[in-house]
Length: 449
Image (cartoon, rainbow, N blue to C red; front, side, top):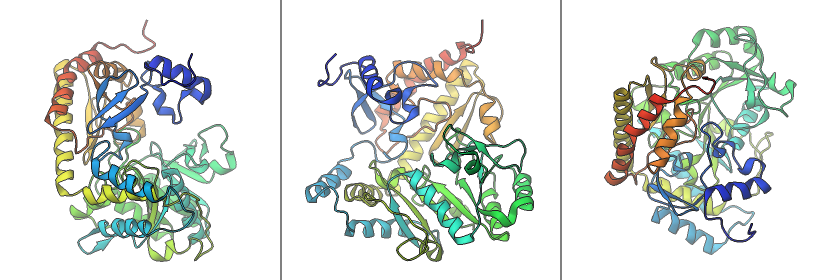
């Protein structure tokens, strides 16, 4: 086997990767573990399409898990990165671009008379952003406990990989090997959309809870929508007990609205505001970049002004900042309207195809994000998301892949449309859906005899 030439098929690429990379991937979902088969090895992407090592092209509904809002390799974003690279890759010092991006983000997060954040600190990953937000909350409140929700994902730091304990308000258990039990026990893992569980947790532990962290709209167990008023309820309950609310918009931020999920709710009349917000994905335009924003008094607890330490050699990297700033500048109202329309076309067609094939399903939307659950009742929380015929997705996924459409390789992931999904790309998706629905209908559970 060659050690220098790029492989020309996915099987060879996967075999070579497994020889030097654990599992052959640098992020687990890429391994196709839940759908089976050989993962794609991608060598190029443009617009609504990706191309694998064999030269085959696919209409892409992953969009780099969200950042490619404008489509892959948008000329304006690529040019901004090239210009930044020409000036140097990294300086270990501040750059004007960091300030420009922070100003752009803060400016977008104003709806009516409300502002979501006053200060922004740039980091490199969503995991780093949520980890830092929790550190700020603990530093501000001088408390240790964190409340999170089952089915919500906030990165892979130790305390956020806790799993549910044996009861509603019991402390968390390690959700991964390598997570100390004492650290997991600092997290309360509660069922989503369950107000009684929140009230019970605060009744028992209120004077020890530093913060509630929640995805603004859940998008990591399929779409889990907050029930009407739930985010406001979280903010009010946390504040009544001296705790903070951290809203994780790593996926929804600048994706579902120019001001993220918070913006969508505010345009619909909501009035809640989180204390801290985390961003990723779109904020970096496809480059490694994330951020933490919040009230000035909280954010200025960070070093060098305050006692909460956070640092990063590549934080605010000039190439990543250039990509993020170009993406936000280009993501105008027409972009969001196009993505919304494209998502509506695909989700309606998917529902019609599954109806025609007699497959039980529900499609849940969070703005332009949507997911399919193979069940006949709405999905309210993580238990609902798991109580579906998820094994049908494997057949559905591979039928779409064979037809030249690349879906997220897990039933628990959202589908992402972009501004580059034109009528031709949409038609390819729509043409593939009936056969995929038929494959889902004829699928059998993995333990069936």
